[in-house]
Amino acid sequence: MRRVDDLWLIDTTLRDGEQAPGVVFSPEEKVRIASMLDDVGVDEIEAGTAIMGTTERETIREIVARKLRARISVWCRACREDIEAAMETAAQGVHIAFPVSEIQLAAMGKSRKWIEQTLPDMIHFARQHFTFVSVGAQDAGRCEDLYMKTFAQFAYSLGVERLRIADTVGSLTPLVTQRLIASIKERFPQLRVDFHAHNDLGMATANAVTAWQTGAEAVSVTVNGIGERAGNAALEEVLMAVYPSLTTTRYNTANLAPLCEYVARVAHRPIPVGKPVCGQYVYTHESGIHAKGSLSGATVFQAFDGHQVGRESSCNVFGKHSGRSALTALLESRGIKLDAVTLARLLTQIKVVADREKRCLSGEEVLDLYRASAI
Image (cartoon, rainbow, N blue to C red; front, side, top):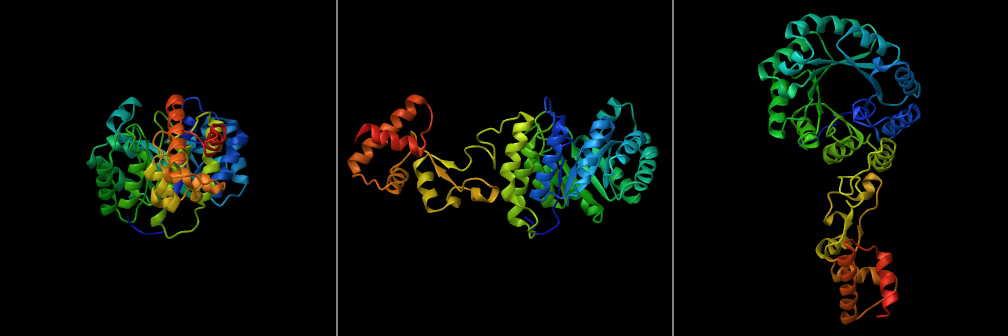
């Protein structure tokens, strides 16, 4: 993995994340999410789609008024009406999406000739009103290589600041992503590339990290990976995957857990207990070997200490897979010392309860069991 300081994190929770079925953020929630994203150190916040209406534009204006460190950008279709609506938000940046696959062009009644005619006008118009202009290759994952290079060449010749490669239906795999990004960066090394992943095949995070490793300077993410259909690359997963290789100190990963919990609550999208980085049990150990290892250090059986993302360092629970080491450590922490026979008896009781109730027991429940059994 390259060791550089050129990662640019674009969070699109307020745009692509809210497009997930059933997700609706109030204006106040959007402003708070933007502030929390800024506390994490996200570089750019794609704050919404201005053409959606007056309330959307006013909310984006409120976010801009907060004068966050992050650049605030808005998403537009390739039409002047969308860009004019974006102008009302006072956002610094604008992203203009062009469908590039034959299947999406046909569905939208467009052609590649239309792209050739429209792209220069959109770029010229947007540059008169925004300090930063990004262009997107929508559904790039299903666009043939030759045209993808043609589109990149066209955008580059127009002086576009950044090209977004969008895996719009999540059909790419890491090796294909690597080839796609490498082919663009090798031909246009000065063109900054943003990779926007979807998770339809469960590979959004892997594809986003691979794109960055291959040379893409920016990746688009959402909190908890929320987004259309199966969602997007998750901010917390991508950041923690690349964090050990970054030389920057501008990301405050300890703010990730509060952000993920807040977004899950207001989106009415509970975090699965085993969800990477912020799931309830991802720093929890039950099996004897893992629990014993955690007593030596959090990272014996974890990729990183939970404190790094604002969670518990690690913790042990007790169940049918538990061993003596974790149980002994728990008891001794409360001044209780048991002989081997008594310890084995208590361990058996723990396993019986866990097996009967089909769950694990907390440390306090184990202590209650010890007291109640009068072993």
